[in-house]
Length: 408
Image 1 (tube, helix red, strand yellow):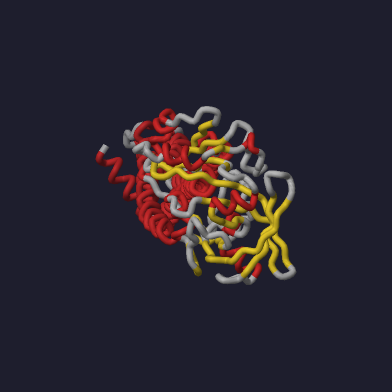
Image 2 (cartoon, rainbow, N blue to C red):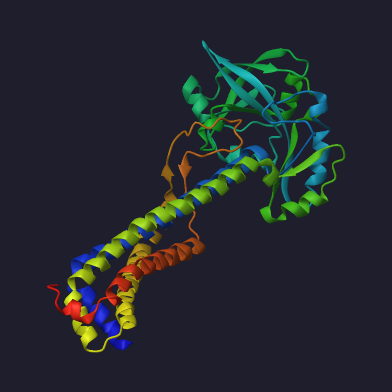
């Protein structure tokens, strides 16, 4: 076996350029697959985190018929006494914060422009609003007793050329089926780095939102964040909200879960395509080696080398190429993924609306995992070695007498 290893290394060194190019092909395929796996995983992970933080929470309490998209203000579709319920829920140790939210559809008017928006009534001091408070770009965060102030997103502020202190008119739907119009002052401008959400969402204190929409002491939902997502089932069982429905993040984000499963399936086929191209390169390299060394194979056969040993020789060459290529691919791919995991890459507005079932940020941060690196490496190794089986079989089939009469 030792002489087969030595012969394999010698044979690969005969044509250094071809061997190097073959290894580079494997390396590029490995690095590309590693980067794509991390990117797709990061995109799905980021979308889920954003959707939970901006829209659904880890858990949500609402009436049976309430739908976020409709923003119904009917009493039967809302929660009565939401602050009392959220205070009780915050007593559960695993709960980070719970807070009522009131969703209202409306129109913002400024000068000669009007834009349809969703108005979100929030309890300003609640930790559930940390994303907006920490995302303040300019101006100041409002207080719970503010009756004239609102927060607007950066894209909306830029499109209307608004700044803190400017006055805007809000036309708001009410629970009585009509509209109410009132002038508000822009207290601050925030960003969540989610353009579709930021350009269509305006925040105001919950009490003011209840007053102007005539939904006193009612809210659309109780929004709940946990310290650890793994505690979702335990907290769900601990919540007692008679007459209302408690849904977890999986139930609230069914479409996103389906999209993630589809993306994983697409990634599987993408892996097959990339590895298929790589295996073609390896197969071509080894077939050329068989063609060029036909006479040599005849001499080895005449000297007593068996067919299985010839096959082992070419499979060993394929293995060396695979190991070298995968190692180079990891050396290239791992630092690349780790770099972009920190800085991300900017995509801009992906055109997802604020009412969409899932949200995408303007930047994707790849999410590398040790499991992806292992699975990609093993897949590349196995495909490369298997691709060498056909050339090895062809070499093993050569008859010594015929091979010796060959010109190669």
